[in-house]
Picture 1 (tube, each protein chain N blue to C red):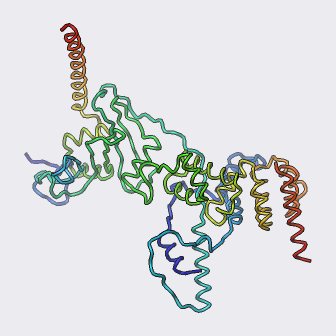
Picture 2 (tube, each protein chain N blue to C red):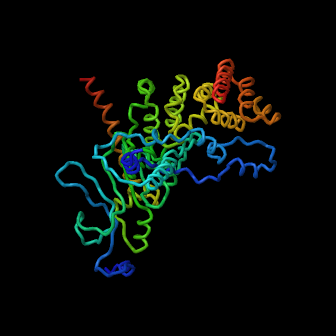
Picture 3 (cartoon, chains in turn green, cyan):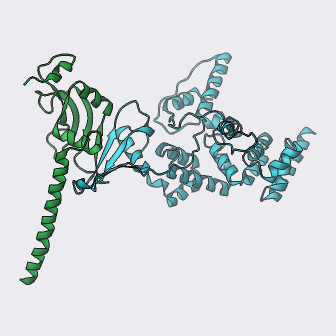
Length: 133
Length: 334
């Protein structure tokens, strides 16, 4: 498939640019940390990128916050050059209000609520059963 | 005056640039233009040029105190051989540097809390157990205009409150000396201990580094420091520092200038005392002192006498000090 966005770039690389999450930090620790990055599509996930546009910390801190930062100015530039955001990046930016809300975010929220209700429905039944026993 | 101390101070001075917007030289003049009539009085603000002039004059310029050695890593001293003319130049540049170091930090009204909700999405409820904090890291925006929004687990997208903003800006754009959580020195009990050790100036410097000028913590700590200084009468601690203007402004607004007045008279600083009363009259023009002074066109010692008669709560002390000053000046001239 010929991606027309490649022709908007200054040099032709034979691939297109994506805005995606790349894992930063060293792979030994049990501590993921992502960078929001503009990179060529064919490159490895963590290898050389064109520009770093922000960061995302998936583990919440002591105030129960997940810190996300993004450089809106540069993201607009790269989107103008024809970069494609990946699904997780689109979800994050949708939650931020920078993009419209991603439909999968809504679906995931609904699924979580269904699971939570099922768990609540199961737990009182178990309690009742134990009492009977 | 040691050049070494000068050099070290220049290198390691905490020159924090304040993000307050650029204000005209006299805000009251601008407001007067808007109000139309020049008679309608607008309260002089801290940053008016006249007020700042008076406050800088009262602060004084004690070079020895401004450039006293601050705690830094030990380096061997550097000695320079200079002619008299070069020494003059060095002293002059030291004076200019001291004036820059004595630039007063702004006194701003307390900031109003932010309660903006950008969107309420009930469909997103229960999407996650943690909040998401989104910061815009674009380089060229001033910190006050940056977008910092929070998506709660309930689905509401709201702007971050001031305390959260300060913390998050410190994460992404760290300022030297500022910590993410305020040091426990700023609690009431610990403040008292520090004041007992006479370290008000260090306290105020630390407060300057840690908090924004219009945050409630900053105002609270400054108020506590000024109260303690006024109670103990230790105005000399702040005399040649950049916090003196703030102290005087606080006292003038609270109308409790007596202690400072007596202190000045005891130290034979007549000019300072006169400018202090002048400032008081400007800020409270409807008080008895101001009206009498304007009707009589009083200057110098007369101003002080009017103040002692009309306004001061400790009139006895002030008049005693005035008499003592007059006696000493008469003796010295005779």
